[in-house]
Image (cartoon, rainbow over all chains, first blue to last red; front, side, top):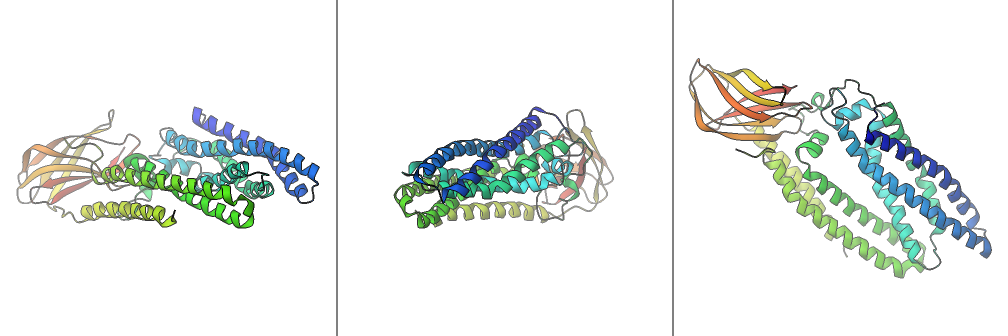
Length: 263
Length: 130
């Protein structure tokens, strides 16, 4: 294990996530179980219980999203500590197999956690909060992913050690027509981070709006609020799409011209 | 708002990046290499991670060298490129030392050092650092 400020933060966030998850999953299960048969009085109690759950889930999902961004920063900071590592490829080699699966998981969690958060935001704006059961079910559905996310973070940062690793130079030789994605994005063309993040958020916002459209069909009572909500999501999506395209210009210049200016 | 308004810039963006990357890669692969020149040695300031010079031996016709570039193999991107203040003439059978000041990645990487002639051809040497 390598103790740095960042790995310690990742472990603390992981343990914190596990603790909150153990609290919130049974609550969500109770809401799903009881809500269908609940009397008016019980429904009110479940609604109150859901608001508490919702706040807790917000905390856990936001901390996971923060941990997701911090994951890349932490891995970048570990490069000088791991002998042989020239980029995050080497760090991932040192933490294999947790690291490689974690890379994939971290790429999709914004889409999935963000979807829950958007639906909850919509639910709070609609009178009678009709999505309580759906959101509780959805939280139970995403629990395995949440567990996997937490398990991989803890597994990775607890097992990683400063062993000598082969890095990307073993795979990305001149005959391979692809660049090392970690060297390319994080070291040699970092403007691409803005492009990828903006485009990624734009895609996420579009998908969330499609999911909300699907919910309108199931819950017609949310239509009025949901249509305005979708409009806002699409505006943000367009904004990120434009931002990504603007950032593309310096990113392309970074790829096309020498990184150190010509003298 | 139509979804296509959002998707079209994303597709254009992705295509532009791929096109730019393969354009520069294609350009590097099309460089004609000089066969009669060999790089005898390279000097690296390991404390400051700087490539300080290369020594060349020409066994063919005299060549005029104009500029040099350092390309990182893992990404095939040009890290640094510079033009010599005065062209360097590489005579047959002579050892010629060319001073450079090219920064290398302190974590390590593989590079191609290109030294271009006035004919557009290049002398290429692979450097693995550290």
